[in-house]
Image 1 (tube, helix red, strand yellow):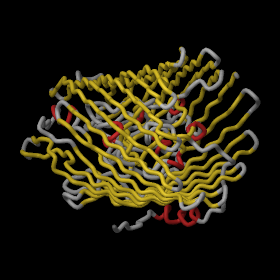
Image 2: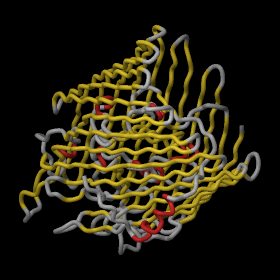
Image 3: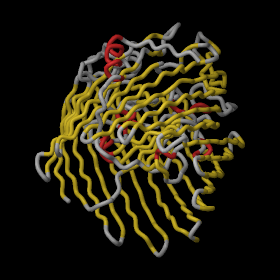
Image 4: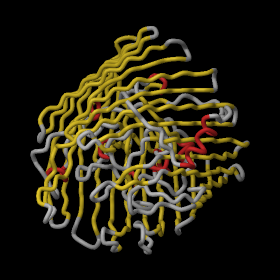
Length: 603
């Protein structure tokens, strides 16, 4: 493997200072618990895969943002955005395709069945408790799409009785408001949240002069109680609004959207060693154009039954069934479809540890009514050399079933085969005392049968989708974190080679090098933070050859100021250096911008 470190000048200047930063970090914190990697609750240090947990404290630094703004500040996670607030946002996990990232809200899949990529731009951090990210294949436990990894967005719960009111505003005519309430007691717990954002935005395309705005009203709620030995829960999340943009001909247009996830679950213990849980869910994704009859619609019903059987203090067997019915419909430029697809997944996972050894073996079989059976697996092994040092190796396979647009939209091909992958990673974690944590991971992901639109008639630009591409993504990730008193420092470095093997070219919109740095300090009840993201040059769509996008460095400052016992002020200064850069060719990005909010707390 050969990865060339080709940094833009500003990144090259800042990198040595980051790598040589003195030990600064944020005081003692409890180790996060992760559920997405194995479908069972484990400490992050016991995960035999690369994971990220983004806590509520970090999300609160991002007023008037979406969750993509938080994801991009962590190793191996890149985004591309076609304009300002509310515009289409793509997530690339370790260089894989954007539709290879499975996105869940409270465990409910929200990837649409029409265009593949989940609407990250519509998920407000205001209603989120934490975000869990698992990098690497997870089709064995979740089915289609989890080739690059899984992002699970956990909405806020009722851990204590509280009411919060917040209002704010900032650059680009942005206005925000939020209410959050929760009640917790012996009978159970209730939580509700609403977040509103209205922004005049800025022109989406370079050379355009018309601001394109965005409006989003997000709602979330949860309820939990216990009847006898059974825990019952209800969760709901919904985002709706309007996104304005300029089309290919730089004509102002807009579209209405609705994205939602609803779930009802029940869990209990028939025996001391057996825990069972069932969940029924409904997810919707709808987009309606306001200047034409074009629309996209996905409705997905799921039934999820999971069983955890303890075979001893260090041995856990997990088995489950996932049933899914997906109704996808679309009309675009006179081409329409309305189709239904059923999927059934059965999985079995075995986790066990013995002394310094830890292992996981999982196998899943997915039966798709359009593509037949697909077998996937994961195998992971970890060895603790000491209390401070541990290593792991993991391997697995994953797949993505073609969505309805691939099969029936423009260039649709009903005979497409699923995209498939084989991935492996080798990792090392080491702690230096109680304050420093280091990790180093090498990874490789080989993806076959990638779907590409192939032009068959250049005079009319007619063609069809075909399984013709192969990709190989390999690289390393290094991270360092230091925790001491009121300080937190975190540094991440990703070097990768995301390569299209068919044409021996780099995959588009993905950099070979990314550096992330976060520095935060508490000052009494106040907090200030600096976040830095440095990305290398990327390639993007062009004719006849791809075009080059320059590397960039983004820095943002944020502050939480405790005015008194009840009032809190939050501010974020985005793009501190007023960097001019592109995440997608021909689309504008945010200039230096300021967003502030004022919160009133009742407890």
